[in-house]
Length: 84
Image (cartoon, rainbow, N blue to C red; front, side):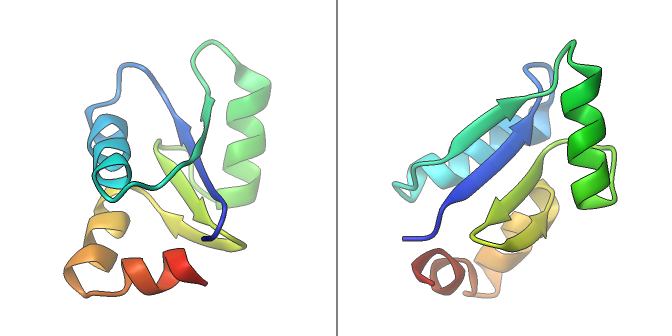
């Protein structure tokens, strides 16, 4: 299974939804919290090209945010990406 990284914030409902989907699918992921950590948020923004959370990577692929993750799931592509 591919490594999954989720940059998140404790106060973000989209982060909660994205993590719940991954947990429901039995996916282990590394969570990197950006709360009160401007350097970590800047690192995430530089890598993702976005400032919002969550930002999710599956393997070397930047998935994007919560809506992007759910779009992959609806399209039947999330499991394929996770297995890569």
